[in-house]
Each structure stands twice: as structure tokens, then as C-alpha cells.
Image 1 (cartoon, rainbow, N blue to C red):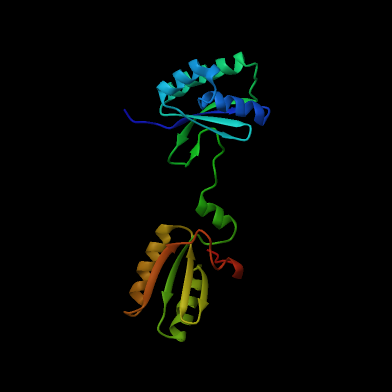
Image 2 (image 1 turned 135 degrees about the horizontal axis):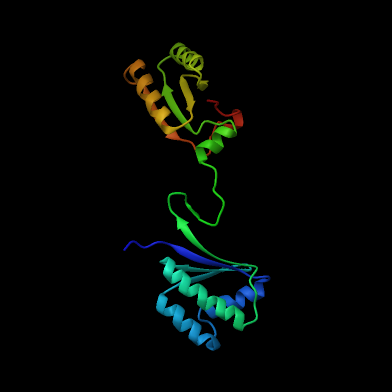
Length: 195
């Protein structure tokens, strides 16, 4: 059976309440022996961040069982969480299911006017670099040319690969050609490359 990642997020009104719960869950106090025994058997990890306590579990069933134990402990201690939610990790989206979706990195860069992927070519001459830059601009690419270096921005990796293949065929042997992702575009200070 595949193992999933789950967590219980317990947000309390103040950090002292969170610290107390964390200590009990983290097996730090003798008066929480029953709670500690139950959680220890399940091998759950516990962490605290300010007024939030997080309990990590390997399955939904384990998280549900731990949640019942935690709810009972909170009730016994007279604590009312501002939020108590069980979350599942979404590996394809790199987030917990209770968190809002983050924008795609490529889409975010495009919205800000930057090309997330670039094709770079070092031409042999200034004339060759100038001509290639003009050709790519005419085709609608955002282009930056410095001396014999031409950089064309693309919207995605697939476009970069295709452009790199096509340009490579037009560049004389010995020209250096690389496509790569630019998470922090070094040309941003110059206005970035459009698409």
C-alpha cells in the first residue's frame, strides 16, 4: 500500500497554548502519558510554529485517529483551537490540499513580462549575431543581443527545445547553443525578454 503524507494543523489563539499542546504531543510532560503513548505507537512527528502545532501522519486513517486524540486533549485542557484541519500533501502541486494553489512559475514569469526559458547562441561574427537577432524578432521572439551573443526568450521548455534545434541547424558548426530555465532572469534589470 502506498504511503501518503498527511498532517493535522492546529491553530490556537496564542503561542502559550500552542507550546503547551506541543509539549504534550512532543512527549515533554508526564501528565500527558496516555496521549504520548498513543501518538508514540503511531510514530507521528510533531512541530510548532508560533501559535500553530503540526502533527504529521503517514496515512489518512492515522491522521484521523491522531486528530481524535488531539481533539480530546484540547477539550480536556479547555483549549479551543481557532482552526483544526487535516491536510493531505499534493506532490504534483507541491502543496497541502488546504493551501491555495500557487501560480505556475512559467505563467507567473510571463505575466510579469519575462521569458521563463531562453535559447542562447554565440555567433562567430557581429553581423551573424545581428542578422539572427533581427530574424528572431521578426518571428515574434523577445531577443537580447550583446556583441556576438543572441538570447531569445520562449514561453515554455518545448518552445525552447524546438527553437534551439532549428537555430542550431542555421548556425555554423562550432557555435555554442544552450537552452536553460532562468528562474531568476539575470536580464531582468535590463527589462527582461518578452515573448
